[in-house]
Length: 157
Image 1 (cartoon, rainbow, N blue to C red):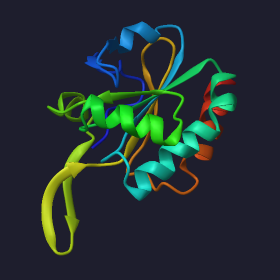
Image 2 (image 1 turned 90 degrees about the vertical axis):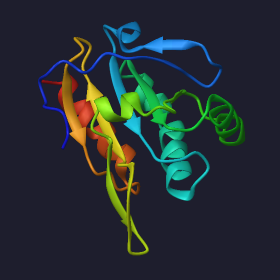
Image 3 (image 1 turned 180 degrees about the vertical axis):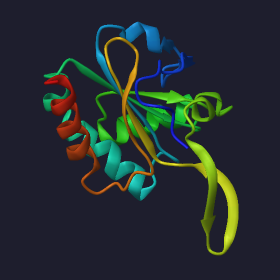
């Protein structure tokens, strides 16, 4: 279940790929696309990250930052960013604290097995820190375009 639209986005401070810390409050006054994904260098996650990378000019033009979050380590994120020339930060949430705060962990099924895993989810957070839109669960194909269209719509209202 996703957090409610119109409510304050849960605060966080966490390490990114170079092990420096960033906090949601660092982006006050900007739009934030906070997206949660299962694992670096898997096909769907790579496709989604590269789609954000390829559309960063359009996203940045709307005074918006993109931040990816997964349970991978900073070292894994560093390699993922280098391998695919990603142009945004990735949070290493190994303890799954932010994933849980944002309801991006849940029951999944694969090959008849049930397990707890990352549910691909994207939040659009307004400059005032409130959640404006939630995509969950996300299908990778066409997702970034849907995010850009929703950002344009929200910014014009």
